[in-house]
Image 1 (spheres, chains in turn purple, red):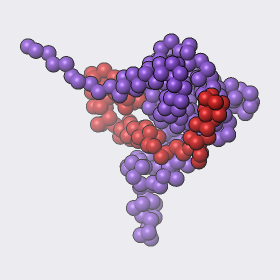
Image 2 (cartoon, helix red, strand yellow):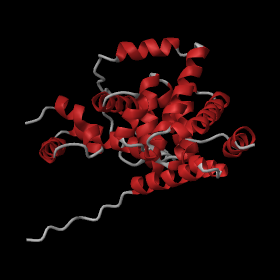
Image 3 (cartoon, each protein chain N blue to C red):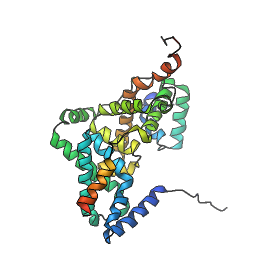
Image 4 (tube, rainbow over the protein chains, first blue to last red):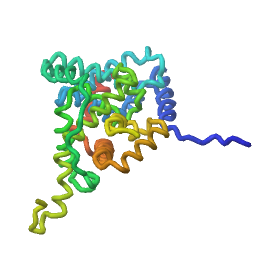
Length: 220
Length: 77
């Protein structure tokens, strides 16, 4: 019996090939193409820096520093197909360095270390009913997510941003953060559980508010 | 029979589809019967959907222009 090989779409392979081509041309002298090489990642790079630094100006500085390093060290990049994770690693390192120098993270990092061994147990089991994207205003969601992220220890914030916001693969995240696939999975799961718990008070109420508001009735 | 504790540990694997089909089936069977775990699974999935939405995180105005201006000025000049 003939075995049919499924045709699998691999946008990541397309991206890798694209980057390999761009890097080769940049190294041959078409330096302006550096703009095109980094443009797809500029949003993610900013968010990755900002999740650690929580300050617009510092985050932009970190991305600019990372650009400088990436451009200078581009000739030494041995695997051009890994450009994306290499670039994210540089920006994360820059952000960590800035954070270390600012001292503002000291309490937070202790909290993160202490929580390492403790299994996170959800407490809020209220039903969210609907997709918040359909029932809440963008600004409300933005504010709630940003607050929910804020109280997470840094190591959970960075994995969450890379994997769930930037949608990098598990392998890419593990490489960027320098952790094993197992550690990455555990951290990501804890990060999601903590974010969910932090968002629950805001998101679970929306259904009641929508149904009962304006009808002169209260849900209790 | 899987316990709530086992299910709790594997919910992200289920969301990311990084789980053996046999285990996935066992977890789904548990979810169909356990309200707490199914609420947890549903809301956790919604967290992932919400944060992946393009507009959930805002960038400062003019960020892209400043970044490319920096590249032109410091890297390509």
